[in-house]
Image 1 (cartoon, helix red, strand yellow):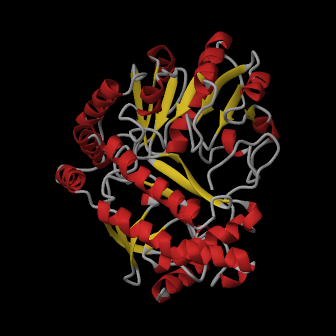
Image 2 (image 1 turned 90 degrees about the horizontal axis):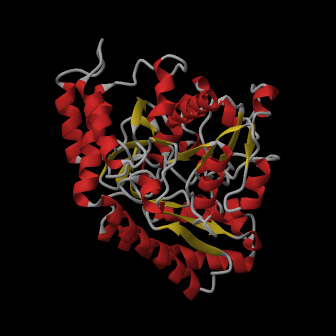
Image 3 (image 1 turned 90 degrees about the vertical axis):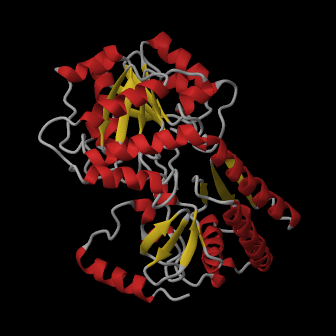
Amino acid sequence: MNFSKSDDLYARAQKIMTPVTQTLAKGPGQYTKGASPKYVKRGKGAHVWDVDGNEYIDYQMGIGPLSLGYAYPRVDEAIKAQLEDGITFSMMHELEVEVAELIHEIIPNAESIRISKTGADVCSAAVRVSRAFTGRPHVLCCGYHGWHDWYIGTTSRDKGIPQESKDLVSAFEYNNLDSFKELLTEDVACVILEPFIFDAPKDNFLHEVARLCKENGTLLIFDEMWTGFRIAIGGAQEYFGITPDLAVYSKACANGMPIALLTGRKDVLQLFEQDVFFFTTFGGEALSLAATIATISEMREKNVPAFLASQGNKLKEGYNKIAADLGLSSYTKCYGYDCRSIVTFDASAGNPLETKAYVQQELFKQGILWGGFHNMSFSHTDEDVAKTLAAYEAVLPLLKDAIEKGDVSTRLEGEPLEAVFRKVTNAAPVKK
C-alpha cells in the first residue's frame, strides 16, 4: 500500500509540532509505523479514506465519538441548519435549554445538567464540586479520566504535577472490593469510575461500591464517556439500575461534535451557582448542541444500542470462533460488552505489542482500520461485518504461522506499537 502523502505530512509535522498528534490514541505510536497510514482525508458511514486514497472499514470511529457514523445525514443537516444562524453567541442560546431538557428526560440521575466541551472538563468539574460539597479532599478513581492534574498524577506521565496533588488521589482495581474498602476512608470526597471498560462487574461490584459510598457520605461519580448512550440510551446507570450522585458524558453524545455533559443531584450541582467555578466560552457552542439533539433523537428512535450490540456480537463471537478453529484460543481472544469489545494477545505468544502490531499491519492490507477494538457504530453494515470476519480469516492463520515459527517481530514491516502509559504504584488500569 502507498502511504507517501501520509509520510510527507508526518515529516512536515515533525518540524513544527511536539508531539505531532493532538489525541494520543490517534497518534503514530498507536499504529505500526512504516506499515500504516498516519493521516485520513474523509469518512462516510463506517468507512474512511486516508490522504493517499486508501479505503478502510473503521473500528476506531474517532476513538469513540462516531456513534452513528461519519457524515451521518440527520446530524449533518442539523449542523448545517444551525450554521445558517450562527455558531457562538454573546448570550445564552435556546438550544442549551433544549439539550438540558432532553438529557433530563433520558438520564436517570439528571436532576441538573451542566454542558461543556471535553470529557476531561466535566470529570474535573465533578471532582471539584464533590470536594466542595463534602468538605473532603481525597478522591478514589478507577479507569481513565483525562489529562488534568488530579487524575494524570496516578500515571507514569506525571511530570509537572505537584506531589501534594498526587497524594490526594488513589486508584483502585475494578472488581476488587477489598482494595476499594481499604481506600474508602472518611476523607474521601468522591469515587469516580468507569462502570465497565471491558470486564463485566463481578459479585455485585458496582452495587456494593454504590452502597459503601452512600454509607460513607462519599459521592459516587460514573464516568460514562464510553458507556453513555451505547450500552443503553440512559447509559450504564440505566443498564445496571444504579443512580450515581453525578455522571459525566462526552463520547457518542453528538456523533463527533465536541460536547460534554455533567449530570447529577441538584443539591450538589447548585454549588456551581456561587461557590464553585466551572465556565467556558465554548460551553454553549450551538453547532454541537444541534448535533447532540439530532444524535440522541436518532439513537432513541432507531434503538441504536440494540443495533450496536447485535453487530458487535457478530464480530466478537466470529473472531473467537476463527481463533478457536485455528487453535489460537490460548493466545488471543475477543471479549467485552457487545457494543465495544477488545482483542487481546497473551504474552505466551510473544511480546503482545508486537503481536498486535503484526495483526494490525496485516488488517490494514485487508482494508480494516483497527486498533484492537470494535468500537461499533450505527453505520457498520452486515457487509462491513462480513468483510471484517473474512479479513480475520485471512490474517489469523498468518499469526498462527508466525507464533509457531517464533518470528513475529521479523515480519513487522515497521516499528511496533507503543503503550500509552506505564503502570505505576497505585495506578488504575488505563486504556491502551
